[in-house]
Image 1 (cartoon, rainbow, N blue to C red):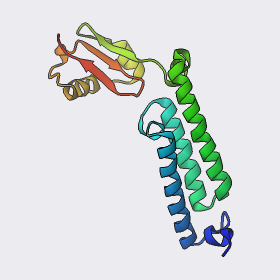
Image 2 (image 1 turned 45 degrees about the horizontal axis):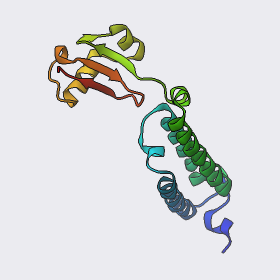
Image 3 (image 1 turned 30 degrees about the vertical axis):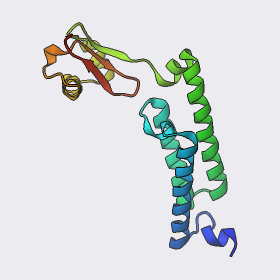
Image 4 (image 1 turned 120 degrees about the vertical axis):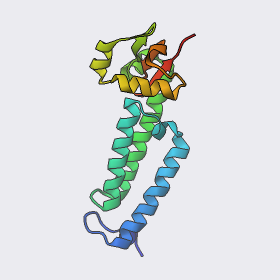
Length: 160
């Protein structure tokens, strides 16, 4: 049986060929995560989100036969490799990290909410309160500092 008979030809695949593709793509995804680390798919900063969307989109097209299987797998591997290089460059050059991932945003300082920053970034008082409760701060007026981190998570500190 040839490779094409096993996985089908793009645009015209049978259910069992798509199933074989699914298993191969699953294994390929695991290999990518093991080679390039969990960071490539586990964090939530803008760079990570873009990579996850592109990888998911590419692999889904290979799975359904809407794109050629081997070239799509190779292109996805190159993308993740490029991401890995970029992540290492970001760790070495602060300016590149700011460009790729952004900066943290102060939402509260000295027990005072910065409502203009909250409005600009679409953060509600309820969001800040939820983050505070998650960090063990029970009341809004007990929040000493609140920061919208590069990952999108809100970090809070309570009274000293």
